[in-house]
Amino acid sequence: MTKNTPRKAKILCVDDDSALLAIYTKYLENTEYESRTAVSAEEGLETAKKFVPDIIISDVVMQGESGLNFCKKIKKLPYLSTSIFIFASGLAVELDDVVKGLDIGADDYFIKPINKKELLAKIRSFLRIKSQRDELVYANKKLSKAFKYLKSYKDENEKKNKALFKEKEMLQNSLKQISLLVKDRERTNKKLELYNKAHQKSFNSVITILSTIIDSKRQYHRGHSKKVSEISIFIAGELKLSKVRIRNIKIAALLHEIGKLSFSDRLTMKNPEKYSQKERNFLYQHPVKGAALLEKFSGFEKIAKIIRHIHENFDGTGVPDGLRGDEIPIGSRIISAAGIFDNLVYRKKNTLASNELERIEEETGTKYDPTVVRFLRKYANLYPADKTDKTKELSVYDLKPGMKLASGIFTASGTKLLPIGSLLTEDSINQIARHSKLGLLVETVFIEEIE
Image: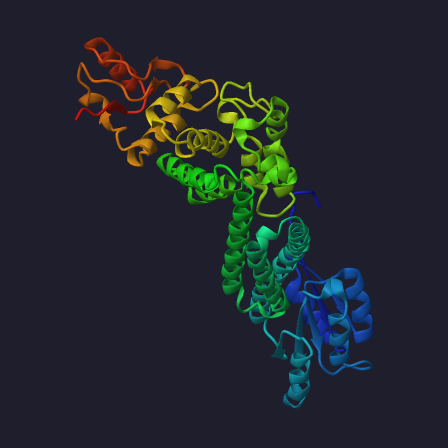
């Protein structure tokens, strides 16, 4: 079997009637299943230990050990805990034993003789159930590891900071809810959809708690992560990204400073304007530390990748990997621009968004993605930090001489066509229109609105 060839499902048939075993064998030959037979419960148990079947079909009453005892022993083996066990009953009087079998863990039964179509239909149906069981067991193992880590993390924070008492209570409640879900996991086969919804709710709760903890560590610029998330969601929506990618970008924005939790309180609670260059260089490593923390947990791999690369530059001069252009995850490019914009505009007082956007545009094409900066300008227009900072978005074909650009115009490659503050002329408008027709520019431009 090659590496990419899917494993055949395994079927074990146990019956002391050799004629019936021959029928099973005939039904299952030339199918996509691999089958084995055993003429007694004792032989069936030994075969099951080596063969590790997905489905076991067993007679209820056999010579020697009964099918009931066989079922009990199978269910005690951890590596067969998700295997499907089906009883085959030949007489109506055996139904009492069948009921007992269902009580001890058997999944179903049928009355012999069974026809081929019914047998194969049951096998297909139960293989789907078996697959769901296996996926659930795997998910629970991953989840258990996450629970252990979260509890350890909670205990550590309780010792360090009494001010986090309320957040820790929320985390404890979330862990209790998850713990209840884990205890109930053996009954979730029939409630799998509800379980997934509850798991997603808990996942979101953990993200909210972690975001709150991160924010509480910022004596200055509190609310930064939430604002960066808001801006990032807007830009991602304007870029028509998928719901899944927008969700990952939202979470990455909320948690993009989680790496700072590994630094001392003295450093993280310090006024950023008073950092020494050595401290700035040290804190600059937080995306790598945050990504290393998150990538250990299932479901956070793409989020960790976004966070790792938020200090990459569009021209390839950034860190940690020197990625450039589209090599940088789009989420990283968005959060990079949204983060600096929030710090320059919404976290400061007495500053004009237009002035700060001009600073950002000076590094557009080198540090920032031109497309991202364009939609950052659109966000600033719709949600101005300063009500006097008014601009209007116009189609390329609605531009007129004398209008003043409220945002620089860049090509898709990052080349600046016209700087912010330029007064439009007939020649510059024609130049913009030519680039737009060639698909090198977006079809709207921001101009300063004259009252």
